[in-house]
Image 1 (cartoon, rainbow, N blue to C red):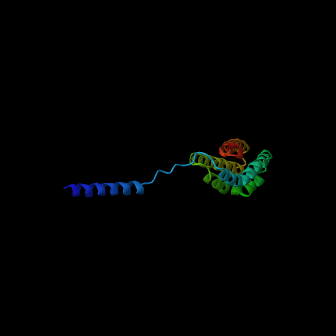
Image 2: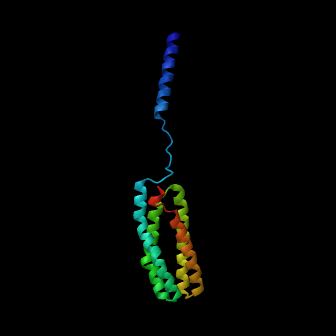
Image 3: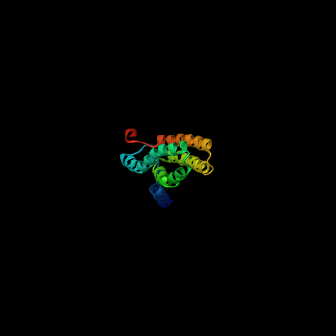
Length: 150
């Protein structure tokens, strides 16, 4: 009987060791950005900031009621904005990603409304949507970490 207890104890110890060694700790998501992440985000941010600067040109075209060039700017130089924001959003922390993706959707809905207003030559709607676009764009840019945030 003592031999069975010893063997049983040994088996229990081996099973316990096996279970503990096979278990892995839960991976936690980072809560801050590393210097490398900030650098990568900044490289994706550059073309987005160029697009933000081009928004001033869009405002001027709307104010001049130059609907053809408004349409050309939206579909030309600002056409890559969606892709650039996608790259940028994908490199943010998970809690920032969700907000950035939502703001990106709102931003593009605003730009699409400007496009429709330009096609309809509706100045007041274009101005109203431009104001909302800038508000959403700036809110989105506020989410992006800078090198001072580390």
